[in-house]
Image (cartoon, one colour):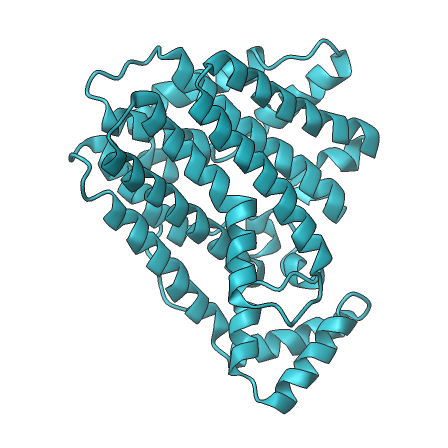
Length: 334
C-alpha cells in the first residue's frame, strides 16, 4: 500500500479552536431534552467526542469566505449543530441496523440501552436538527438539509437491499456513497456559502469541495475496513465485508477476475455470513488484485478535485486548513 504522510487533525483545526470549543459546550448544555434518561444519553454521546469534521468544515468555510466573520454568528453555530446532530443520529441508527456493539472503541448506545430508547435517541437528534433549521429561517438551507435526510434514508435502504450482491456496478456504489456520506459533508460546506450570500461561482466551488471531500472520506472508510486494526478502527476489522457490503475494493477485485474466478468469488460472498474461514479466501482475492492500493488512488483523485475546487478562494489560514483537512482525510487511520 502506498505511504501517505500522517497529519494531525488538532493542529489543522487550530485556527477554529475557539469555535469548536464553543460548539462542544452548546452540544452538551443546549441540546437537552426534558427526559432525564434521554438527557443522560445525549450528553454521554457528545462527551465521548469525535472528529467534529462536519462542523469544522462549516467554521473553516465561513472564515475563509468572510473577511468580516465573527465568533458570535448564531446562525453559523446552528448550522454546525445541524450537521453534527444529523451525523450522530445517523450513526446511532446505523448501529441499531448493523447490531454494532462497539464504535470508536466505545460501547454503542444499543449495547447499553434497549432498541426502543436507542431509536428515540436518534430520532430526538434528527428532531433537534429540524428545530435548528426552523430557527435559521433560510429556506434554501432548509431544502439542502431536507435533501440530506432523504438521501440518508434512501442510501441506508439501498445498502440493506443489496447486501452480498456482487452484481452491483460503480454507478450504484457512487450514488450510495453520496447519499450516505458525501451529501451531508457537501451541505456542511454549501450551506455556509448560502448563509453568506456568495456569488454562484464561489458557492459552486465550495459545494464541489464538500462533495469531493465527502466522497473521499467514505472511500477511505471502505478501505480502512480492510487495512485498519480493530483498535484503531473502533470496530472489528472486516466488519463491512462480513456484513455483505460490496465496497470499492470488492468492485475493483471483481473487475480483475476471470469469469471462472468471478463465479468462485461470488459463491464465497454468499457464504460469508455463515462461514468465518471464507473471509480469508476473499481477502486473498482482494490482495491479489491490489485492490486496496487502487482504491487509495481513486480516493486521492477525489481529494485532488476537492483541493483544486478551492483555487478561486482567496488565500488565508482558513483556506490552508481546508486544504490540509483534505489531505488528512486521505491519510487518516480511523
